[in-house]
Length: 389
Image (cartoon, rainbow, N blue to C red; front, side):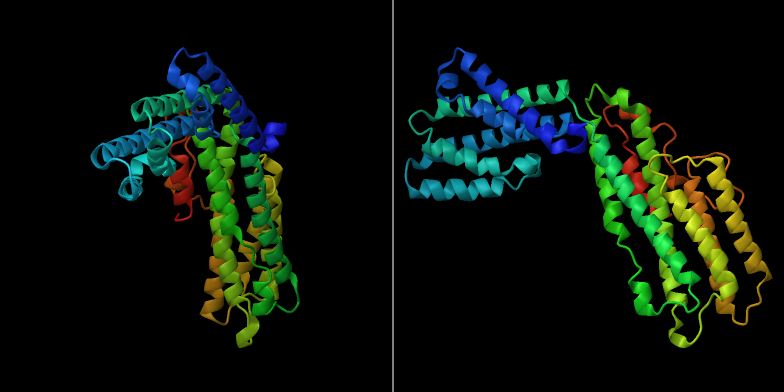
């Protein structure tokens, strides 16, 4: 429970364990460089300690590659120029350029650092120092990868929080729209703007945690133990991402046509009230998505009934302007698409719903792919494309 609520705490424990173990292993090695520079082993463990096995392995290799590149650069420059200020200037300048290679990733700073260490600390015996530095750093990285593999982490609690935050933001936006439509006097443009929720940052948080969960499953022996939870989060993420897009479109439309700046609004009271009922029912359903992305029959039936009453009211309404008729139709269609987003995982959609396009629907078996080297590989694309559907 503690590690689930605060993943950083779990990372701290694993990093401390990996650094301690790497230090002890380095002291056991019967080599003079290891006896003289044992502290580079825990350093490598710290550099290689990340929240996932894949990230630990990738960053450990990148760090060792950067250290070797910087060390070889320093050896080459020192054999050419010897000791002196020009040597420092050339090593730092060339190391900075070399660090720009994408192969080093987030560990690029070790190119210049390693080069300077070789010039300063390893000057008496640079070759032995380079072997000790790179070899012990690699040892520490391997220890970090091993610790992460033995005690892997799947950030399910973090993903759950992100999903709940997005669900709350979308539901609150729907409730605010419903309350505005129920007023006798429609809100002004400024009043509508006060009801707008910042949904996009929350949705981006869901996408980030989805990528983190995807990466955490690679090389994770516990991946299949979390199959049901990962599948639920995957489905809830797709549903909420589609819903957030539809709600943003609906909010933009209502704010544009329901501000009485020109002396009239597109929806009269006869249509505003049933529209508000649909919005309120939809908000109640959205709040259950993180835990129950597959709607129960009672929620579906109630939402469908409200939407049918709205559709009947639109059909029987008398419009004096084509703009009002088009607006009412657009609002109804968007609400049907919201209902379709809630039914994104079913093969038997609600007759009142308009399902998202096929590429915005979840993969049928995302968890099965999660156990392979590229788990949930299509989730990110699915979530990104969901907004364009």
